[in-house]
Length: 400
Image 1: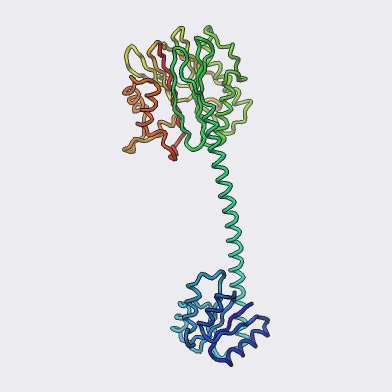
Image 2: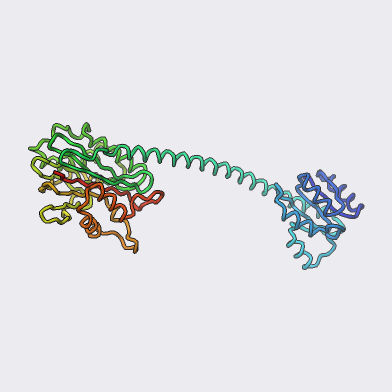
C-alpha cells in the first residue's frame, strides 16, 4: 500500500519508514498535518499514519480535514498516541480516525493493524466497483425506459389513429371520446355504414390495462372491420339485422375461446346495427355497462336494462339481440366502465345515475358539443394525468 507517515520527530519518521518498507509498502514522510494535507491533495495515499501532537496541524485536525474533503477514494487513518485514556480515544474517533497505535511502535501490532486497514480498503474498493456497475446499469435502465416510453407514445398515436374519423353518415351523426388509463389501453370502438340504410357499430372494453390489452383491442379492430374474417359484409341485410348482432357476438366468443390465445383477458361489448330506413336499433350487450337511449317523444334519457355474459370467458354462450325504435331525434350513448371509476370533486364516486343526470342536462346539445361539455364536467382529457381505467364514450344521434 502507499502510506503517508506524519510525525514531527525525525527519528520516528525513519523508524516507521524502515518498518513499513520491510513490510513491502511505499512510504512518504511529512513533518506535520499541514504538509500531509498538501501531499494528500497531490497524491493518492491509501493509509495515513499520523502522530497526535504536532505543530501547525495536529493529528485530530488532520483527520477532520481529510473526512471533510471530497477525496476520490477512502483514506484509512491510524493515529499514533501515547495517550491511552478512553476520552482521548473518543476524541480521535470523533475526529475521523479508523484505528490507533501506541508509542513506542511494536512491529507486530502495526502489521496487524495494517492488515485490518487492507481489508477495509479492499471492501471499500469492492463497494466502489459495485456502485460503478450499478451506475452503469441505472444509466442503461434509464435509456431503456426512455425508449419504452417513446415506443408507448408512438403506439398510443397508432392506437388513436385507427379510431374512426368521419362523424356524419346520412341521417346519423356520431361523436366520441377516448382516453387510455396510461399511454395505451384496452378500450376500442368503431362504426361504418354497410349500405345506404344500415350502419354497424361497436364499443369494446378489454379487461386489464397496458400492452397486452391494447394489442388484443387492435386485433379486435381487425376482426370486426368490414373486411374481417368473422363475417362477410354482404351477410348483413335488413332481413337479418335483428339477429345479426347476437350471431356475430357468438362467433366472436367462439373465436376468443378456440382460436386466439388471449391469456387471462376477456372483453365486454355493445355491438349493433342502426337501420335508418326502418328507424330501428338492434344491438347485443355482453357485460358492458348499460347504455342510455334518449326518447324524443318523452324528452328523457333512459337507461336500457340489459344483461349479457362477457366475451371470451366461457365457450358456447348464447346472446340475444335487443331491438328498439330509433326515430329522428333519438340518441344512443355507449360508454366503458372507466367513466364509473371517476370521482366527483367531493371525492364521491361517479354512478350511473350521475352520468344519466349529466346526459339529461346536456341533451339539447349536438353530439360534438355534448362530448366536449361532458368531458369538462368529468375532468376528462387532462394531459399527464393517469386515470384509474381506460375511458371511452360513443354517441350516435339520429339527426334526420
